[in-house]
Length: 93
Image (cartoon, rainbow, N blue to C red; front, side, top):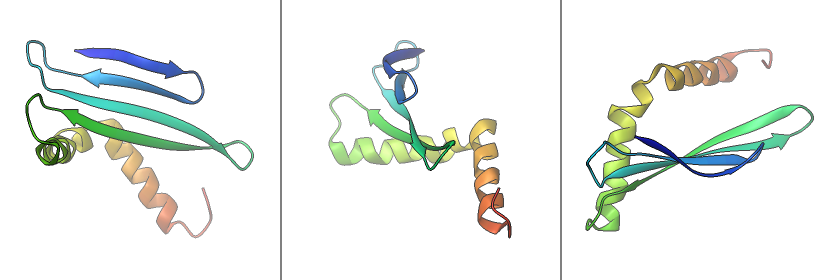
């Protein structure tokens, strides 16, 4: 289940993802920052919430979810490919 938590148009929005019936959730904030002219810097922030778990475990759980689930999504793989192309391209994209 996905819930919209907060939003400021053209700046950021935050959502939570949680399996139905489970108290564990992944919070994601999408940030947009205008830089030089018409370019936009896009940032993703992830945080896991595992009730009754210590902070170190929640961080490790978040990393595990990101590595095994989120980065495999087509959208983020496409973003990774764009980043690779931008870093290896002799002419800026």
